Image 1 (tube, rainbow, N blue to C red):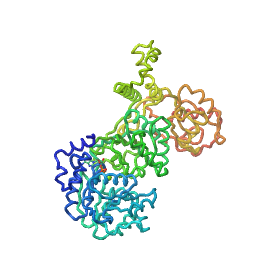
Image 2 (image 1 turned 90 degrees about the vertical axis):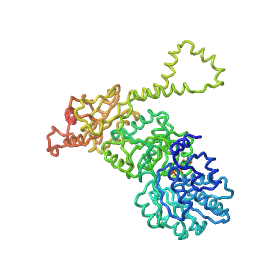
Image 3 (image 1 turned 180 degrees about the vertical axis):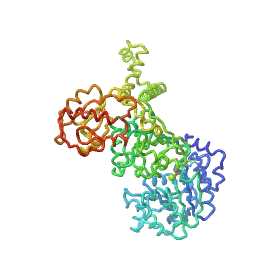
Image 4 (image 1 turned 135 degrees about the vertical axis):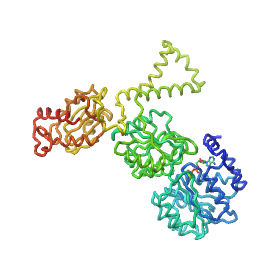
Length: 607
Ligand code: ADP
Ligand code: MG
């Protein structure tokens, strides 16, 4: 028995059996065949009602709670095989889900000869789907768009259906299928039954229930709009530009991770996935700019675990129905906080536990509070793992893997030569060398990185923490800022290009109005100073110098705090001395040496 099924069984051991629900022998046989021990809560509640009563139904239950069988069994049981006409229609938001449901229905009905289920969805040949329909379809599982299309082309007749199931109704409405659903329902008989299944009950779903359903009974499993108890929610507070390194840490400290990583836009999704791939992770992007074929390929690789991290937009991820996702990573929080529930519902499925991690900046913290209200659960603020912790974790993960690896016989012929080659090494020496290979990969990266955790939200704005220590890096001041039309990304690009540096060699870029800071490894100090101080940007000579280590009691130069920004405003474009409130009087003329001494003052003042 699979782990999922075992967990289901334990969860449900005090509850009813499938035998008591009123299911036919053929369905019970399938239940047994699939290894379902006992019905889940939504199945227990929905199945008897749908079998015995002619009623509409609204059922709310989290993702992964077995809703497909909750409507699938009763629907199958009421199909009249004597009739060739389509009797049941299931609408679902995505092609993925559509195929999954079809597959499930086929499994459920495997012992009932002659039931025909057809999947209808966009992005595939419509005439082939029409042919399948013509061969007979007792049950049609469809996405709303293609369904509507085929109805209007008279390829499908649903005028005699008994039941219409709206599965994942909240997601369908999220995706803007309201009008399509409306049109489809117009082509069904007035006295059809409507069964609506949804994880959440936003007001649009309530509206559908009101407009298109006839006195529906309501079943709610767990609290409304609450994500699964099996999911724990954690957040990590970082500076705006530390998202990616933070993600790397979260992944590196979980060598076995199998994750869905959510970004807000298609562009970010593609970009972050590319970074991960470049850095050697098994990652792939899933978003709407990919062709259907590309998306299928990505999903296939993710399902069979060739891809360990699926970086996705919310829309593209709708309908991802993979059971063993260990972590959902909110690389950015969604614009609509309700969407968080959908994201976190991708893990902790079918009785397993999972984690939903949020990488968050200080300004987004209030969103965390709002989400807590929706999910009815508290977030735990966690610290990102340190470089040392990660290296240790990776090392012992490798050791564990080696200890549990089955040795291969095929290696035997090579052993004498290998032994010969390594004969000078003691066991200790061998272990050291062997592990160094893996250890160095992480160690050399993390040695160069500063630790990323920003102080917890309650600590007052980084104050009174003493001077910042940038380890092997120097922090540089540069007299370019927002007024030169630069944001941090553009400045970073400018620096990388000028210095001919790689992506990770310029870090912690903080852009103020008229000046900025950045970090570079100490060993490159001469290069930085000599090259940059000989540059001009828009006719202005660039001036760069090392900032001094901050004195005690100064503010730390981390994050892009509003305070420092305002501080920056007090200086005007390469002005003379600074006096508060008078900055607008200074003009932008200077010679290089003067500007340097001024800049130093600025750098200090800004702390
Ligand atoms: P939902 O639609 O609520 O997200 P699914 O219907 O997709 O959930 O079911 C999630 C997983 O649980 C599927 O793999 C399904 O086969 C399995 N499952 C459903 N019901 C049971 C049960 N009673 N016992 C064991 N596994 C089940
Ligand atoms: Mg479902």
